[in-house]
Amino acid sequence: MTRSLSQLVSKASVMDDYDPDSMSVARARLFIKQFLNPVNKTEILPLRESIGRILAGDIFSSVNVPNYDNSAMDGYAFNAEDININSPTKLIVIGTILAGKAFDKKVEQGQCVRIMTGGMMPNGADTVIMQEKTKVDGDYIIFSEIPKPKMNVRYAGEDLQMGHCVLPSGHMIRAADLGLLASLGISEISVYRKLKVAFFSTGDELASLGESLKIGQVYDSNRYSLYGMLSDLDVDIIDMGAIPDNPELLERTLLSAAEQASVVITSGGVSVGEADYMKLLLAKHGQVMFWKIAMKPGRPLAYGKIGHAHYFGLPGNPVAVMVTFYQFVREALLILMGQSSPAPLPIFNVVCTENIKKQTGRTEFQRGVLFPDIDGTWKVKPTGAQGSAILSSMSLANCFIVLDETVGNLEAGSMVAVQVLHGLG
Ligand code: AMP
Ligand code: MG
Image (cartoon, rainbow, N blue to C red):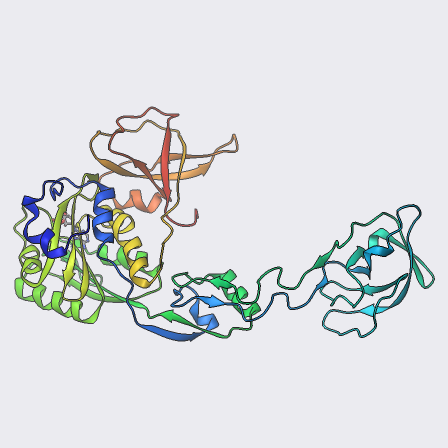
């Protein structure tokens, strides 16, 4: 399917398997994916500052973790050959090993050493018995059960082995990774630079916050929901404002956005057949494909390049902006940020507790609430009115109910696929 963007933009009509007026969600995703590569600049960051960033090279372990065999329990270290299976084993205690302290004596036959969790295993010992499984008798201990050889010992390299790749290039750094890298003694790492993402809204009807609403105006909400969704990713956000449908202003803003950022996102003005300047400008300055996606909400969508910048033209309706962002933009940004295989938003099947109205032939992303039912299982219910301008349906939701093209009306009790948006708060 690999085709150049210019082929797709200029000769779309002669390609019988490419119909911009009827694109499935999955196909549109694939088309976009073939034009995405990580931004290639990297920087070295102190470990803590790298949280949320993407590794720009493999990380190998230069040490074994743990570095030495050590005890997993508070107990007594001894040699497994001393275990007596016919009568209770009795060993003399020759010393104590605390975590972080060296012990230079060798444990001989019939001997043991009291050892604390994390204490370095002494020479001659290969097994630890928990102190609760022993009785003290003067300088001796007596086992109250027969231990298994080599138990309760954490071996050198058991967590990470010297020379092994512990984290691959393209991996997003999470809390556990910070700890993991710290356990290797690594204090700074090479990561991809932050992706710069510029966005603006288009429309004569838009008022910005702080202005009073004139007749026929709406407040520009898209720049706020976009800001919120982008804030969940570790990108630099450039807000270029709400731009009226004025060709000079739109042109200036578009070119400035494409110069400053690696990604430009706009909302509104890309509807098919609309008398809008945006489409003319995009055709003049870039290579942009305009699609009608077989989905609801979010039918019109544009993707392409303006100069070096990737361009996403989202629909104007507030819910459609959020749905198309989650379905097309989020994953694309993660790839551009350097992530090699971004995890998709999790999808799983649950029972829906209400009837659902749905036409076949397009994928619908209805807004839903996942909740723990009294029977102990998680179920979903739609958030009410599902119009593409009803932002409250999105605000109430913690998931999309994803109903694919073949699905029609559903009765309460049906299984449906849900896509989790973020923590189920
Ligand atoms: P458009 O795609 O430009 O035709 O816009 C479709 C609908 O979304 C219209 O009702 C617009 O008023 C509305 N809309 C477009 N942009 C925004 C925005 N930034 N904030 C709120 N509503 C918007
Ligand atoms: Mg408009």
